[in-house]
Length: 156
Image (cartoon, rainbow, N blue to C red; front, side, top):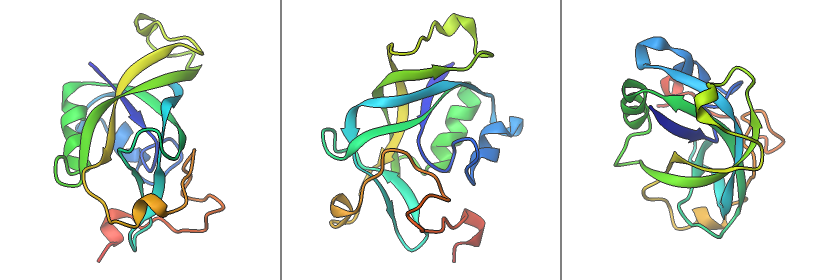
């Protein structure tokens, strides 16, 4: 089993969350919420208003998201979904646990304030102007940024 940190459209209540709960993709168990220990630029870019975590540690803001325990099948699915290695890369990130789900596997031994490591998907390449875009600490497709997320099946 692997731990994965999601910060964008795969979070609960976001447009791509159903992929996390589709058992045909593999198993994903919600463990809790966390924030990155380091700052990273979390930006909304492209004509589809996609959310990207730029792998520029020390810039931007501490990013809030969700921690999942996933099996090998789901990890491979997420790699495919995130277009690893062309669009995103999967790397390890340090997280500060904020909230632990009461139903989470007790073997995980997570507690608020503890530091843990998980995989995160960050951009492999990006446009030169992306680091100068507004950064966010917590993505919501319905946020006050006013940028409508375009689902994969609606992109032309």
